[in-house]
Image 1 (cartoon, helix red, strand yellow):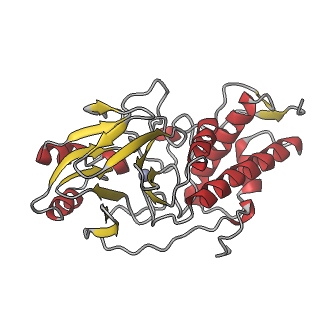
Image 2 (tube, helix red, strand yellow):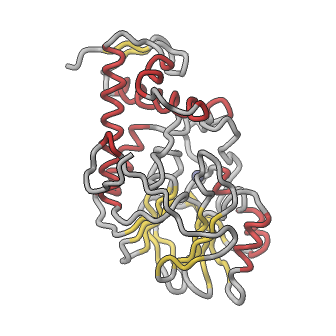
Length: 313
Ligand SMILES: [Zn+2]
């Protein structure tokens, strides 16, 4: 993999896997922003979930992380004499929300997030990692919507609804700071998993466009280190998806009908642990091709369904 990040070449995504951190230790990463990494590294969560502390004195925590008392203890220990008044949730996957209840119980903080959506949510059989990953019971004290603002003593954030990885996914932008907490929508260490029905490729691309229209200087993602060139990264990820889509369409034109055949062709060297995620990602692209009338499905779109390419209009 090339280290050259200057070209937004889709076949050459320049992932940044450098990250300076120590589990359980808060690190000041920007004015008014501290980060503490939960000790839940996996092939899907990289080093673990990032929890961010916003402000001084009366603070907000973005994504308390997995259900892990040590992590909650570490967050509280990092804030002597300070008070957590708000808990913000980017999306209801358990590696982000598992600690919400414990942190709320110990601080009395208000919990803010999108809340329930109308869309079908992911279950174990549609989980990229094979685990139950959606926190179906999450009920925020305050429901957030696109364009809302959240305020503390010395900070203000704008809410950006960015469905695609999850239907309830939110990014939080520090008002006037050109800084976005991008959750799992945009991460520098890897591409985001878009796994139906939890994930939706059309929504995901629209949500990327939403960030592309902004002029931010830095993203702080849910996993991995800061993203210093956010516009370039977003553009590269959009090109990457476009390239994948063309490759999938070409596979169908070449006579492939089933997702495993396509996966074999476009992910020839993928580690077996990522195979379910790769198959779900292909399904997400096929769903979008279906919506655009470029593909026909021989049944409800699913991993085992056959697909046929239609000629472009
Ligand atoms: Zn996550």
